[in-house]
Length: 194
Image (cartoon, rainbow, N blue to C red):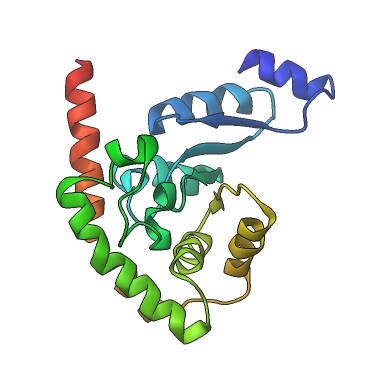
């Protein structure tokens, strides 16, 4: 962080951000930068309706407490939240990754069905609703991937409507199991690291 602070002071960079930092690592980085009068701007982590670990491991709360923006990568869960893969098994590496296999894949259908139902009310797609859910989270900015101009336009459609508090609650409730699953997976990873 000292080197990053040097770069800010030299005018080489405007802000400091980190990626995949835990809550503790963020606090350490924040404090090191604060000693030089420089804020920690962001922490880029995986976060979506299907990957809720930042809510259970302290990262999201720490971002909010310290005024750090959480930049959510894979906000569409590798395309799982678009509904594209419900009726056709994904090909390539996706077919071996979560949530495209086993019980998680079966649990995906009701989530996408709810996204589609909410989206129909606004003339939006399931993916746009999933992005909107993230946009309405305090201190969160999603960064969806796009392979072409059509996907960029599609993703931008998430900026043109607002979900109601009731719709946000429905989505939270419908994905509560994913939140628990993320917490369990985080615990397994931490235990393996010991």
